[in-house]
Image (cartoon, rainbow, N blue to C red):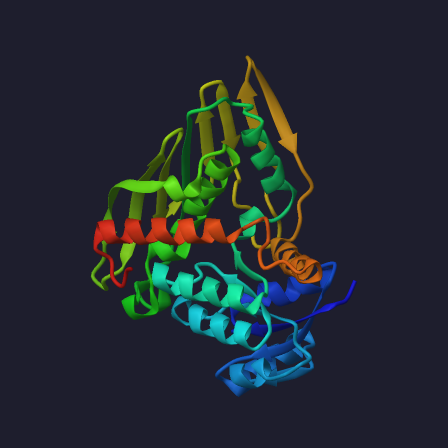
Length: 331
């Protein structure tokens, strides 16, 4: 298979995780680093062995780059993704795609027009764990009428920087609320519930002095499926989930995995017995890269791990959640 030549846009911490993972992917190699800061790009490229650096525009104009990984601040994702797609590059974009539904639609419209892969990088959806979990739900191992409880939170410390800046789309919901919401969307779909039918029916939370949501909870529901999602950037929360159904429970002690390893197991409690499902772990960043490479090879615009319908539903639900707290900007 042809090697996918990657450019990383945004040589920060998350970009570093992707760069370290890429040599372990089946099909990708790091070829270029793009940044608004030439010195930062050069230092990053030297660290990870990328032969090319440049501005975003310079990299878009090159014909030796097949795909870009966008790990810049949330407010820049949409413009960079659209520009990359117009330039003929596949795109792997860190979550969230964009702060508003309209911007997400603009990106997906461009991907469709360009006929190129666009994939949102919710890392917990890539690899054997997600496939096994989806299969357990699809096979109705815990029945129907599913209820999910999921959370993701951490204490950021000082209330400053990107996370606490409304102009940079800061806040808990956009930073980590997408984890429980994307899980809800994926499991609803696995259960045969159209994610487009999911809606936020209740919201609680706190908007801090800087104007961003710092801690929030949401109830999400559709016929046959409901979820309680919680997120925080000011308090540690379990990164776990529990899925209850008419015939049992799935316990997900580590549902989101880490930056270096996907989750390894979950417990199914049904029919009066416990069954531990264990799967191989993968590097989620490498798995994301390979999903894009395979889409390129197959001529697909989407990856099954995070199809566009899921990205649309997640964006809509996050917007509803933020609107319920009056956390701006929203749309």
